[in-house]
Length: 392
Ligand code: GLA
Picture 1: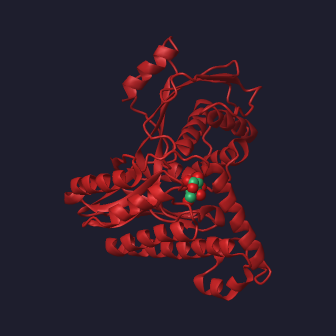
Picture 2: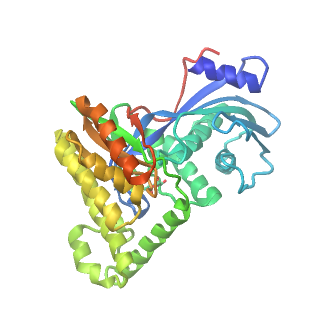
Picture 3: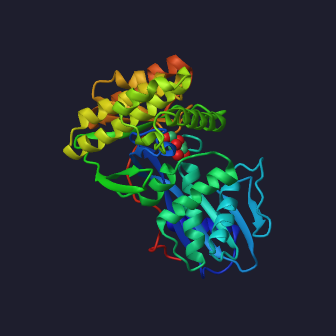
């Protein structure tokens, strides 16, 4: 892989090999804990082995020339003097925003030639954007001879998403992409950023990702809408419970005491999702440590139902997959993963029924939606890194 992508880099940027470096950042899948991160709650994602490769070489004229194999007709060029968001650019705003934030941080990025090769399906809710953001932040700072911490890079990439791109995401994706570890899930408390890497021992089971292949449409504006509904809920709860900073702090018991303060039914259900989901993530960590996959799977199903009924971010396609997958014998857990409104599900499926699972789900899903799903065998890999062994 490394040699191939270096050749592709050289195709776009002919010249000698000196100073070429290769970096990789994974995509992520969230096992449980959805729409809790920006509420100061718990999440439980894992990094994938698919992701974004970045081949890069420094320049010293302040110019950035970028090619992406996923957008062959849209090369991107800019200089560090003109870092403006461009609405019609399908991907260049991520690296541009990263350069802006790196400069603010004092990292002396002096320009670069860059080639990206990614194998995460775009817009599928597997964090292709956090992946390109993190690999760029990590790679460009290494080219500048600096090593900001992974936590700094995750926060920086989140700022790009929030301030440059304009989606008020939490920190889960960037954190998982940064801190992922092979065959481990990452339990993260989003209010303190304390985390624990929990071994994912699946025994006879495997994780299967299913893509709805539904375009995500208005996902960004709906995402921001959910976030502001949660803020409204928090404000109303604060009238009774003055010291509370985030919804993530509320236990189910505390929620019961303050729930009548929430006047609006929609806001009430949004808050109920956050509070119950947080409880599920906590339990999920405990049962995973005990190796109780059956209970873990049940919690995943409850999570989907809450995202469907209370948070309303699933939609027909994700619900159709959920029902079809739940019905397969040997599938002990399944739910939507990521922001929702399309994208993917994640399921725990017994190894020896995976092909039946795929067949059965495909048939039902096609009948229900007219769309064909895509399945990925899900392998859990490491976080952002430089590929040292690349022979350049
Ligand atoms: C997106 C965001 C994350 C998180 C999830 C929902 O992936 O980028 O920060 O909020 O949605 O859990």
